[in-house]
Image 1 (cartoon, rainbow, N blue to C red):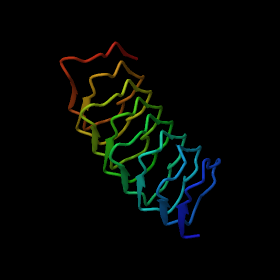
Image 2: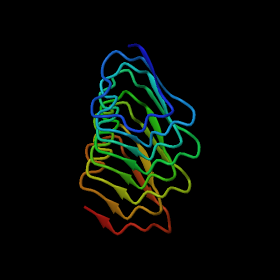
Image 3: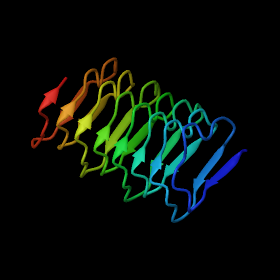
Image 4: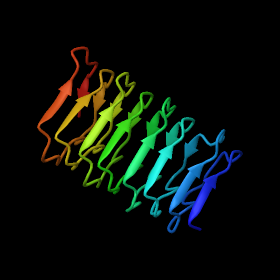
Length: 178
């Protein structure tokens, strides 16, 4: 299979449902899928993905090790609230814009993304937790932590050798850095 479209009535994608040769992945309009499950699309050959507005959770390792995946785009008005462990680990992406409603970026979410230099948060970000190792060892130079972040987990930015600036708003709600 080289191309696959997620059908409108599909509500669940199981563990490791797709792996390998798929080069094109699309989502049908009005799809009922709300969660991309555990390693659902890991190790695929896709080069880009647009995450539809209605996806609320990207599960553990959902797109991990997609060695050709250079572009991850979230639809305008994204309803995404959780980026789970290793969701986008080991991708060759260079930039990512985190949607407004994401509340948690879980452990190792972007682990091994050796080209990821730019992480942008939506202006009205609702992010409250950046978990352990979420952005560890990335080549980012600067990052602006959203106002509502309450906790930055252990080693969240460890090994970011190019990181020169971590910026916080004057109204930052940060309470804990582990």
